[in-house]
Image (cartoon, rainbow, N blue to C red):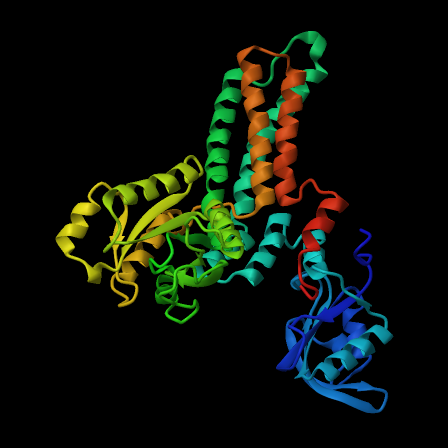
Length: 463
């Protein structure tokens, strides 16, 4: 691969974030990792120590002591990368970090590329490709749910599911290939009824995985929630109440919010990204008009739309018109609309209830007094079907995996269509091979340098 060192090189990089900290960890991996570290470490002969041991000593450049360090040694297949590896824990001075790295490079190591340690773990059979991708997801996780999904995938839950599907399909593929070898004798090793049953069963599993992507994607990246409504209905006040901080400017002057304001909170382990939008109204103000245009864009991007209305002043006709306007915009787009009736402290409760009796999914709140704010959070959490997560079902979170599963499923559909019209085995074999190809792309049983470059270039250096 052009962007990575040769697998026989020994690589090094800072494994902790750059900058000042209490400690920093510098990682080496490769055939000469222990030898190179030993050449500048004084305290113990690292070439003679056991794997998974830690040793205290000093890193020296000639007679000059660079730092007192702890060195962790991992040998061969017992390391993360599947080769000799060393981790040097130094003090967190950026100067010390650079001095140690330069010393290692001077003694024969090469600078690691992005994701190169995890790439080596994949190339050395320590992880398959989907597990390797999950390493990056673990690092990037910002909620309990996203971490849980990434850890499940890193432990091989998704990989094992894909491997089972491939193994069952490979069995029939091999029988059909065998038929082709005896084409002139008109023999049938692969029972077509059994093959049809298998494909239907595999498609059921694939479709379940494909459908889980919507849930997995929002858990991984956060659920986008757009707060929309007319000016001065309390959108910014609601955002501040949800975040429990003064994030947005609150004013009685209509049109105060002229751009979108975003912030994020975690509700019961799920991350939600709230977007406070400009008030929806007709205006001649050019800047405010741009903000309103952005508001509609955010509605299109959101998974949940909170339509906020002033319960004390809105008429029933206007309410139903506003609801229909949003419903028409999100129709058929797998989005959820929740109507929030704000300022219930300013009007007669009976009048308000009567006004909203035709609206589904309505919550009555006072953003100013923080009344019923928790009910909004509960409603949002219920929107995310976390049952699959709690039951440890396999959930797809990676867009590349989703695309590969979709392609594999399409070729299985072609297999079924072919069985229905009794096409010859060579055409069945072609479609089965294509389905196996796309399943193999997920785990790395089939991979190219371009694919690996694209995946690991998104990792940080040092991982």
